[in-house]
Image 1: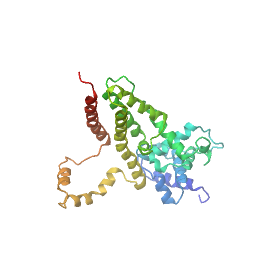
Image 2: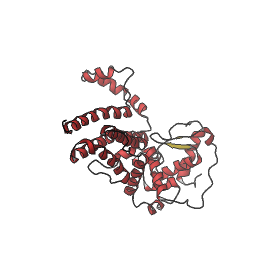
Image 3: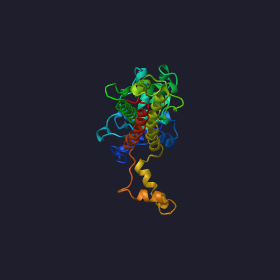
Image 4: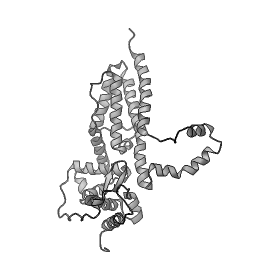
Length: 311
């Protein structure tokens, strides 16, 4: 064991914890960052350890959850035979592997070495297909937007088409929470498939009677509504990877502090509001997105109606 590479020792330790029942099917295992801190290794080494376990079927990556223990039948599976040749790489495989890392543990966990480790290839191999991490992230985002087609012109009326476009953008972010973290609104991403979504939104507004600047402003407002809420999806992934706590577990830890706030008498409106909830308040970002989209479209409708020619 002493002469084993560090990633194999880490994998063996996690595998043993699964066998001993300390980690059960569905339980989250340590994230790459937690492994790196606990064992004092690089993120790429941590990724390689998780990749080895994933290839054995001991763990699996779940988007917006992280890496979890797979079914019990995989625990005693023999390790895969050592590969003698590097598997064939393509740009698509590199991008897909990077997306899987970002989906499971957030964009902050992504590195070129980590991608290579996940693919089981030499550290520099991905650079034959992608020039830099920034280029890789752009390719990842474009691939993510390609997964959800922008709505066609079939919905009648600008509102139905704009609403369908907003829901499509939200679906992209739900599938890949890290997408909302890439690039501020002031530095737009010039990606073909993102442009296709923008094209659909602007085409829906062309018959509204609004001038070009107003149409473009509305398009940006819709995008900002999606992005502004979606950034919280990725932040939750990052928080879970960094702390090992789920959202509910973290909230349980804040109970004493919140109780002190509510009983202090300094925040009467907040106290009345929070204590009026039947069973507490569960944040549902999907519901909040749809709730916010309706009044946003109502307000846009007033602008469109004001621009429409009088009969």
